[in-house]
Image (cartoon, rainbow, N blue to C red; front, top):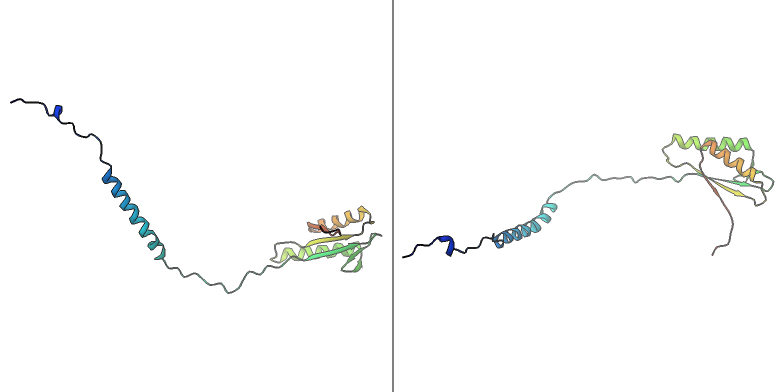
Length: 143
């Protein structure tokens, strides 16, 4: 009878068996995939209903024509510099007091023979009044 040490003949596996761990993780994954859509559909919320839509007013557009002689025409009527300044101030101040967020725009129809100084005076009057959107209307060929 020979007595031997158990460590000499016991060549057991010294690694962790990962198969049961992977099985458990896959089962948990399947459970979560199945239950998440059910949980999301289970919550009912009664949202308030809105009867009125948002009313957005377009900002006013002021159109001014400048003739070759340097005269200003507001809506087809001859207008002086002082009358234009009053009109610009009135329009700019009326939009500050209202809930309208955009200020009106100024569209300038200038004759090609008009002096630049008259256009510059018009732009200066508009900017002093608070009208910052200024555009020039031109004619051209369309492609």
